[in-house]
Image 1 (tube, rainbow, N blue to C red):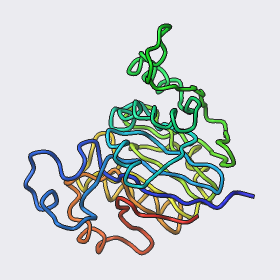
Image 2 (image 1 turned 30 degrees about the horizontal axis):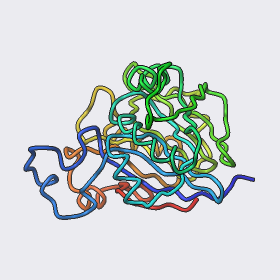
Image 3 (image 1 turned 90 degrees about the vertical axis):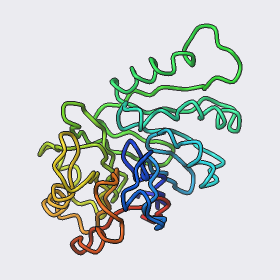
Image 4 (image 1 turned 45 degrees about the vertical axis):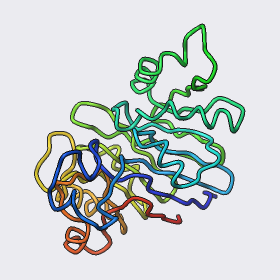
Length: 257
């Protein structure tokens, strides 16, 4: 039986976040807290296991804001900086839990982790560097603690990105195409999270209408959109336009699965 999960949206913004530096548009100057978006990540918690999907540049602040005292693993979607740049701050958890952090990533992302955080893998290690235990994943299911995870391959233009299904909940970010074979893995989900960057067409992300079409095609009853840019519009305005069962996610939204 799949464990009950608490899903917390740590961030729902695109790579620049919202507000974007130097921008005075109506979204970036909004006083609505739902228009303040850190870089995209989720916290997944069962009774016995806590993991994050991605460690973006806001990772340290996200962990402090949610008062996360224990973390068992990091599961990566892909190697872009807005999804992995905060990994160095994992060393606080190394100190707290007295062991290396379990990292789950495909071979492409693992290569980037080894390159960008090379000092964690050097023969001569100075005190206080991150301690990482890399676990290379494929499209085969794997388990973190008591949480079974099904990888789902999606495409970010030409880059393979890992989406993940946690029981009835599917999380996909940074995609503009999902092959039919992978769509089969999503069917039957009760909740899907999908990236919806903006209303205009984009080269490597679903736009709003494309994300809505995917949800309706797969007949998932409840959907939340993430990886949102300031170009999408104000949260309240866009939310009011969405079909029944489809919502914009926002930072600190909590779902009990």
